[in-house]
Image (cartoon, rainbow, N blue to C red):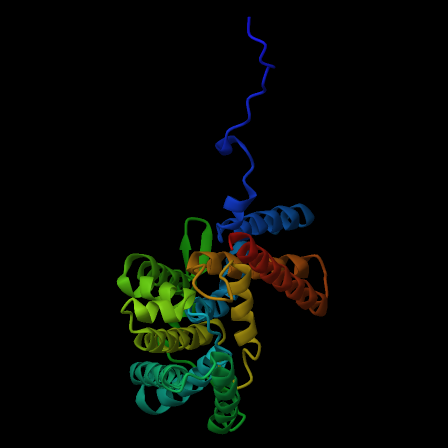
Length: 331
């Protein structure tokens, strides 16, 4: 007769709530936050989930959402870009001025060239001189912002050419109405996702962001990777400039003053680590939508814009704290 004490079977690992595995998944937290925000605001306002309001949230997210893709690429390399919004605004002024003299298509090409040049300058300073991205882009942000006002003469340029405002054109899918700007934003995210997840370039971006010295030792040309990331960000800023004229057909040198910080907000809330090498554009898209849902829902609830900024700031701090906690648990 056995004298062994009866034992209680322990639950398997798969049947237990595994906090570590959840924290290691950057996209899960933002998705939960987005769903909770939608549930809360839809319970407060009956019109929150109306197709018209959902379309408005998407349209309001277009410019910052596109810029946030470029910001994601920079942050994945353990950098930060404080100038991307200023580059887009400068591009919108070039687009409006050049269109009047040379036509819309030459203007689009000129804007692309200028924005890529600014991105190359940022990337060249970071790679060739090994300067911190924060300092480099802070300096170029100040210079580009001043150059924008000098170029515009502190004037606002109204744009009437069809191709320049095309991304603001609306179309219907069943009962849902949206704009080509929303489609352009989603295509930018799709292209960035493919580049990061399905190409060697994307793997090199993650490797450089995770540990640049180790990437160099493994044969990756980290300088070239970083330069290509900043140039790509210039391309994305040009697309954002085009989308901005689709949203409001006025090129204003004082527009999107907080675009740099708002793009960083979307990236951080979306789960991309400020320390590089972790995250992706899927999370950034969710982060962009969280900010859009939060602002729209609080506006419908009658909350002052200043309090909305406070709520967004708290959300950013929470997101960074979660990232720090996750890094410590993984070490």
